[in-house]
Length: 478
Ligand code: URP
Ligand code: ZN
Ligand code: ZN
Ligand code: ZN
Image 1 (cartoon, protein in one colour):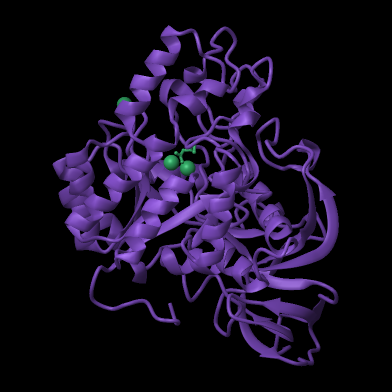
Image 2 (cartoon, rainbow, N blue to C red; image 1 turned 60 degrees about the horizontal axis):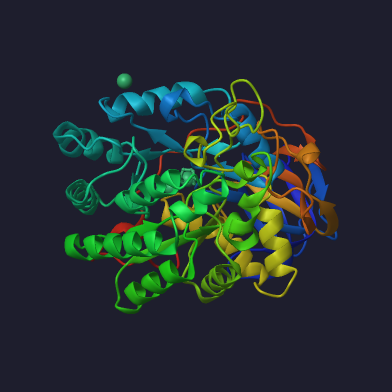
């Protein structure tokens, strides 16, 4: 029997720490050898001229998630993870959403049923807590954390999801006790409601006014409030999808005071602006997400935050809706006002290419920073390391072979998601994922699907080493 099932030969291997020329020996789905040269009687995958990086981990995607008023998401677990795989990802962490009035445990079961046998990548679930009852706070959450659901998301806005201040504090307190990492959607509900109603009275209901209904101070205020609550409770938090210079300033302030406030930004905040919402005939609805895309100053601040380490993770916030279809909902017949447009845009397939091209290609990020921001830090933050997120002995052989020179114009035709458009249509990028391995099995082979639904496994996650306010500090081994 061969010593290795597969050797990836002659690639330039990139981790969050190093860039080196070496061969990778894979056995039983894991990396078992790294050496200048590995001889084998088994299979060889030639990676000459390619970067070999840990498969992308997208820790913020929405797949087959229930919307309010019956809105249907454009991706089920099959298309969502297929799109992720084509984009160079090997793990995604979508959400299990607790609808108000229902048990969280039952919601987790529902999402497992949706995902089971459907996924092409590995996956896990964050828990969205929409109804923090005594039962949820006292029993369900502690048990679920023990079972490997070690992160929650809470919302400070949206009619059907928002928690009030007291509820936020209660959830933070459970997170502190259970050492779960809380992700916070920081936009203030009342301010948005107030502005939305004022805009409507003035007849300003085009998609563009979505951005005006939640301007930068709405995000800044909620970010500050979340940080203050985290300080009061003494719990680390992760502020997700940060979009503006002002919110970044709040996070920098918190971090400089030694608070464990982590942050995420996303593709749309580097590449889109509020002007994209101005398209005619509801075209602007294709860019409606929350927080909304901002302006050049905020884009620059997001880049600086990625370079300085203020952001530990870069995600897609993939949240796909069809623009134009009977069941799809970006454009809802007579309902043209922005308040009817479901929030969220697709992007899991282009997260890596866009950050690589705009970041590494334009000299803003090193290769190591790219890997840290798109894979390694996601694994560390959310309890998947050391099994995921690196190229190291013992780690799962989740790899992407990357062509750094390939020029691609992003178009909907190239996408594998269930949406009927991409907000990044026409964008030119250099660098593209070519071949993707999940636990040693080739799931995308030079741009052709070779993996199948069901190849992806559910991942029970450990407690995040970043979720403890005191106690053990994360080390380089996390
Ligand atoms: O507009 C967005 N981002 N929709 C997805 C849900 C969320 O808030 O992350
Ligand atoms: Zn119900
Ligand atoms: Zn959110
Ligand atoms: Zn989201």
